[in-house]
Length: 176
Image (cartoon, rainbow, N blue to C red):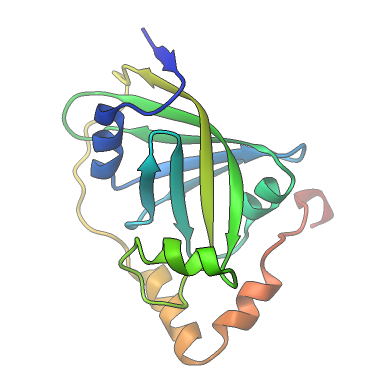
């Protein structure tokens, strides 16, 4: 049976730190966005705040939904050890890569300066823990390097800043 509460507990924070994969679901009146996320890109600041370092990539619906004050759910689930699902219900603040706060938060990650598109600060209003008994047991092998390699190449060729500026707001899927 699932339990819901208002902030992260210490055991939730430890669980989050161990996960190699999590999901961000968001919506702001458009299609619901669900994105799997990897790499070492998440930090718990306190029991009510999580930050996520967002690498550039194809779209940026997370940005669109945060800018529109949409709803967010972060989902972590155990693929190893005891079964568990942790859902975090929150609102997101965008920390632009041009802001002073960005540099402060970016220092929490072991990521080369200039490679992150933006950082999202998630303000938690509810947490839900459930059993996750149907989640398969899977073994973590390694991170894929393709995205980081691409971002580093764009940065080295001085094309990344231009890419970041162009990709903040993705087109509406209905317009494609």
